[in-house]
Structures are given as structure tokens and as C-alpha cells.
Amino acid sequence: MEDRIPIPTDNIFKFYALFGLLLFVFCSGSIIYVYHSTNELVFQVAIELETIQQNQNPSPVDKLKMDVLMKRLDIAINDRKYECIVIGFFQGVSVLLMFYGFRKWHKEVQPV
Image 1 (spheres, rainbow, N blue to C red):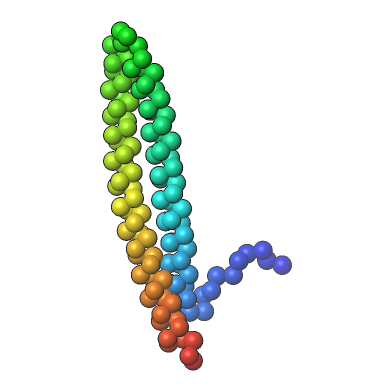
Image 2 (cartoon, rainbow, N blue to C red; image 1 turned 60 degrees about the horizontal axis):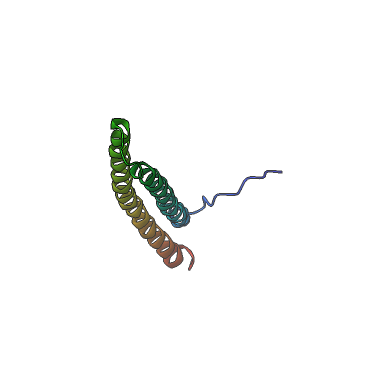
């Protein structure tokens, strides 16, 4: 007995619709992951920056560490924007694919 999930290959429109649905779900999860991981990084960097800023006389190493942490924060925020744009594009493609697949499947294949 096979334990695999059967993939509907009897109709290309059904495949488009279900692949679009699967892509939509994964894109939604990716957006949640990107925001969560970026927020964790921002909180971690904020704590480290605050501990460095508490020093009355920061050393050159502390100043360099502050600059690196600020740059890391800027990069993380810019990366989040770019990643969300790319994921949003694929999410839009998935919605179009779902719409096309379900519509063709419902209008052309199901009536037969």
C-alpha cells in the first residue's frame, strides 16, 4: 500500500489551480517568517546597541561595533522590503494561476 498523496494529473487546469493554491499558502507563510525573523533581529540589535550606549567612555571597538550594528539593522530592514516585494509578486502570480485554473476547470471540464 502506498502512503503517497495522489497528485491530480487528470486535468492540467486542476493542476494549475492546486499548484497556485499551494504557492499561495507557501508565500503567505514566507511573509510571516520574513517579518518574524526581521523583528527578532531588530530587537536583538536594539538591546546590543543600548548596552553599548550605556558606556560613558566607549572604546574604538565599541564605536565600530555600534556602526556595524546600525548597518546590520539598515540591511535587515531593506532586505525585508525587497523580500516582501518578491514574495508578493509570487503571491500575485499564484492568485492569477488559481483563478485561471479554477475558472477553466469549472467552466470547461466540469460541465462535461
